[in-house]
Image 1: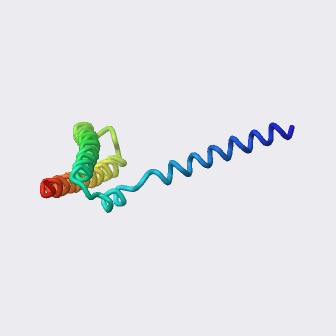
Image 2: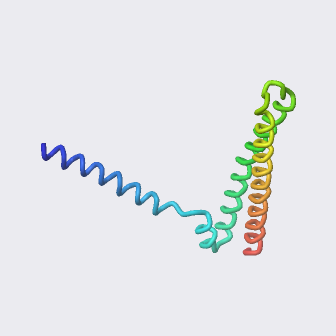
Image 3: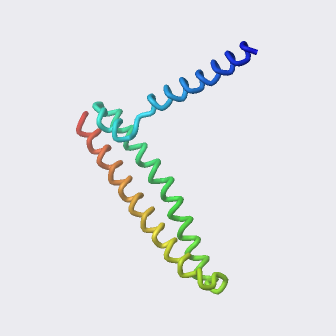
Length: 117
């Protein structure tokens, strides 16, 4: 009985320890930006921002499709249709601004990397 309890406690502690080490190992993007010193660090950051922009661009297209569906079939949505439309227009603006911001950050890091030749 005590062996089972001991084993259970050891398993739980090992999971806790591994999750803490994973959390400590993953740095936020602002930490990575602060530590970027080489040309390759900035190229990596630029690629990260471009990848994020691409993922957000897919969300932009999804919102455009939803809005197009609403415009084509607004009669299906009834009174909630206006809420649906305004919600997805707001998401479209939010994602579009995020794509623009990520592309600006990517261009900025590419420019920094070029200066570091």
